[in-house]
Image 1: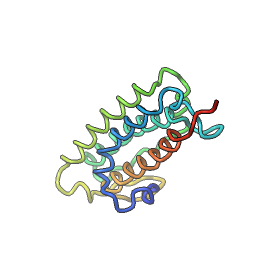
Image 2: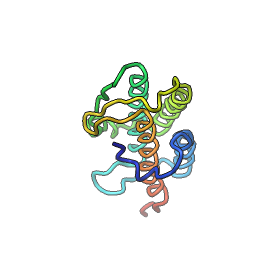
Image 3: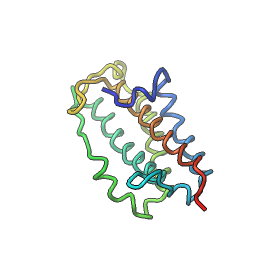
Image 4: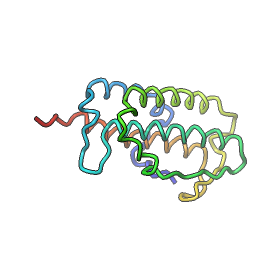
Length: 163
């Protein structure tokens, strides 16, 4: 149900999702513009493109969380991340804008989760590709997804620039 469960392990998902914006800000603050554009391999996303993906995913998670609360047995609408990513090559999708968007949406989503009605964490919803899951599983997926991409960005940030 949660393809990112191995990244989360026993960590508190709310703690993870609450601290990710700050961790991203620190990473991008140290890697600079050239570091943000470094690709790990041909055809792989740069750190900036990963951040754009995180901002887009936060939009999707925002909708999913709210629909899960609003509808009985909500069916999640999957999306094609590669299709969404076709615009990530544009320089207009800069680090500052992506980080600001991600951070604002994440802050709002954390407040939404923390203030969800009683019983929400055990509320069932369905993902057409993963089957039935709970609202809690969506929150855990958010956290594991963060950790997966944070590791990728950390590796890119620690890679020395080519001379």
